[in-house]
Length: 265
Image (tube, rainbow, N blue to C red):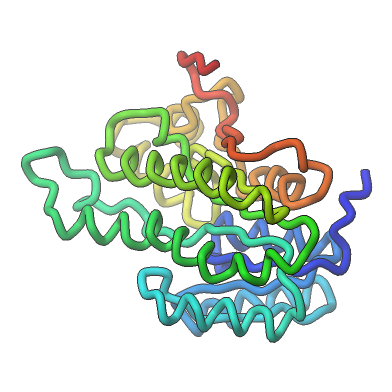
């Protein structure tokens, strides 16, 4: 299938590693002009160089702290200046869950909650607000919010809260921006295999007395019996970025391999 993406421009926040990097890689493979953004100058430049070597074209590295509106607006303007157009925004910048963020009610500090909501929910809002003027220059464009299946699960107050907030943001933006030709969707990955996952699997195996294969199945908790990979998430994102997905708007695509024991309708 021709996804009709060649020659378009895309900005991916959180694009220096993990799912964001995989999405940038997949879009570049389709002929998209790509800009990746990260708060770490060294990491984003190294990631851009890797992608440029792989695809034989320039990948634009941008530095952004999505928790700060000034740097977000500069990133958007720099991306448009470098690419000449923006057709797709992928919001993927978020803080990884830490020990302090997994605390229960009694030990969960206000400042930790504020930080996690600021970077992900407010970061996605800020980035959309800054990029929409450029997206609206196209007849058809897309915002893709990489969210997570914690929106459907308990076990982490912050994880559930920030993902639920992004879900609400996605639908509100879809209703508001559709008249401008901007579709807004979300992807909800589960725990996903990236370059950082082996350490998590090993730690889980040690904590639960499992071998590595058993630990991965336990973490995945899905019908596939394995972790979905970042590349598989990127394939879904690439379809959502394309005009072929124009009928999808305001909704989230679960991409966790079919989490066990739950029905959503």
